[in-house]
Image (cartoon, rainbow, N blue to C red; front, side, top):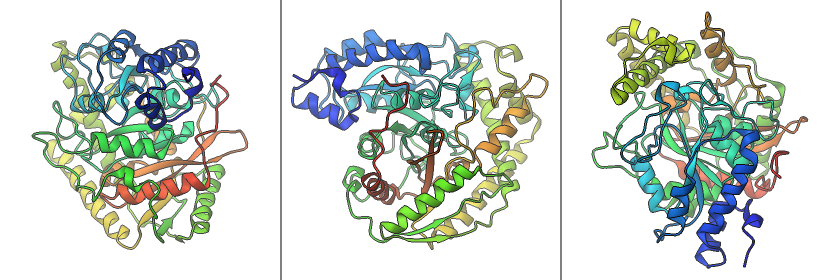
Length: 477
């Protein structure tokens, strides 16, 4: 029999195969993952709510015969509710909130055979691109414990990078899957808008900004998991175009000769760290070596208008989160319950008119059509994922009398990722580069709307040319 401790660094597909061949029992994988969480989590602070007894019960019961039957998994503590288990959304205001039903995505995770061990750390309501909430404290990057793992799905990325689980749930409203994937040296795909369901509680979030999926160690895990969860739920307001075939069939398929546009210049006036520029030029060179046509471009978009409109919608998301908390708990919100930036964003939203909000949405939709026309000439767009390598923890601190400082710092850190939340296009951060400090720096590939297939084919080709799954951070023993 296989020693469960020896399979820590196998991906979810390989772990499921061991269970399928009866070389390992699900309870053995679960106990190994629990032991690893108990050993490393005090240092990393990735998991904020444990579900060990629920996991043990599931592992010793009859599991569905899904693609990941018996594989340990973690949920980000936001949006994806699990009946009977608290969901804090990273906020003290929800520290004791317990949903009474599963989200549809969780239903599909269970149907795929995944065994959920707990909930992962995040910033309050997923607002910032770091994971340092007042409620849970900072999650620490396994590559350097004094640096951010990114956010908002930072706890999930830490857990995968440190080998606690082979993949973990995340969601993405401005880059929250791709940012921590970049910071932690992992593969992170944001699917096309509405590829995964948000029901039964939500049909649309943030006027389409927010998407659900996961952070994984390998491309094939991401593709296979998306196959297991994608598709409309009953009553969804809209859904993504149906793929021509399963996404897993794209992994290893010939991508053909792609036209890849690339740029290291953001549409906003933000300085890009030389390491991030080097990473994107290195990725462009690799793509050219693989036979693709790679063309440097400049995107002509009104960056300031785009970010102002995004901020209008993002502030409305903060107000919606606070007011939704009040509806869910029956408690009136007060400033003391929330972090200063969250409250300041909500106050800004309450001061703008409904017509101003709709103008912001219309502006983003108009910019989306401009980007779509640009993408007609190219199969893929390549940019840096982030403007800087993983920042020191505390970089996003803002004093209570100036909460906007954190948001301004965030805008300097993530000038590239929000665009795909605005347009709804699929995008992925691929870990192809580590700098001289041994910090991972992701490369950001954007596909046409509905075309995850091309991204998966290209990602698998890049993974084969420059494998990353065997790289280990210092905090992984």
